[in-house]
Image 1 (tube, rainbow, N blue to C red):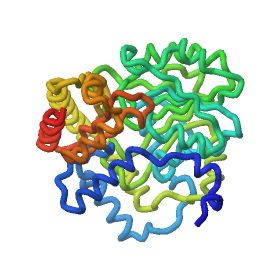
Image 2: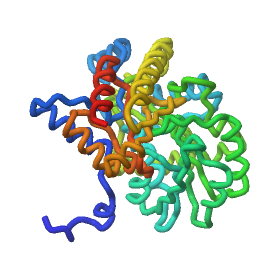
Image 3: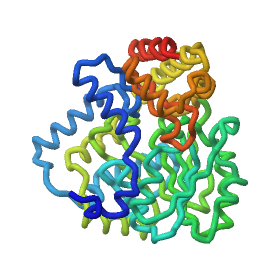
Image 4: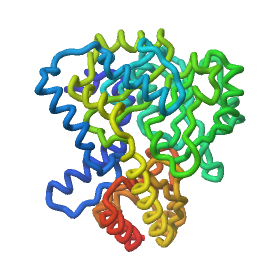
Length: 391
């Protein structure tokens, strides 16, 4: 196939760095190499048994056929109940979207709204896919660097400066991938004051790590500034909270015209999410939630362990993140001593020690690396020892 056969759009998009590095690590592992994969955000817990039982029952009951493109009514009701119970948000069934994963929610929202030249404001460090999905949907990503000494969070002044007549979306991810940064209600309110003066700007709040906040309380913009709810898409899913990454269920609540447009796209692209996964997600959202706190406590213990260990490494600084299950470690001193980029550092680390991390460059902040601590405690200890020996 010649290069000119492929579209200009797809040639402009970079593959996911996190998936790419994880795939390279898996290939090394398949060859028999001693590899520790800490590059992908995936809980090591098994999907709870009652959720798996619900999936098996759905199969036995013959619930294996096409469903409505954007979700079965039972799952939409479970999502409505979740938003009400956990967030104090009220949505009608027509304001709920179910997609095959959180990525699909975001992609469909962008595809439904972006015209060539429209801008999406993305605070960085940021998840690797926001920018590339913006490009795939014809928009222009506007990256706003957020400093480490500001806890990697967007300020109202930065937001105001980034807004132009072409601005269409602001992406807010809290808790954040890759930094674990968490916006307080007061910080969201301050951003909301800016947003009130720019009625053309919509907000996508990525709340996928909602249940992983280690201090304080989770807050989401549509609750803190209810006047903006009519132009907020609140996105979430079952992947991280319920250890269901492979089940591929993302969901969102938002204004009915946007949800309807996203549904229209799904009727001509993916159609529905897996019917069996949808029934499993109904049980996940409606069933017992007590294990979430137990898992969060385990993640916090792992966070503290890995941060203590990395802070003992030569040239690495690691501040415990307030949310999610990543540490975003400052390795600039180590890079200076080795005369390396963060990308070369991570490549050499994988080759020499078998530990797979993601360089900060992938998240638009060089000089750092991201490590997922959603792995077994003994594995994390081993990885930390290898990293410390390496530097």
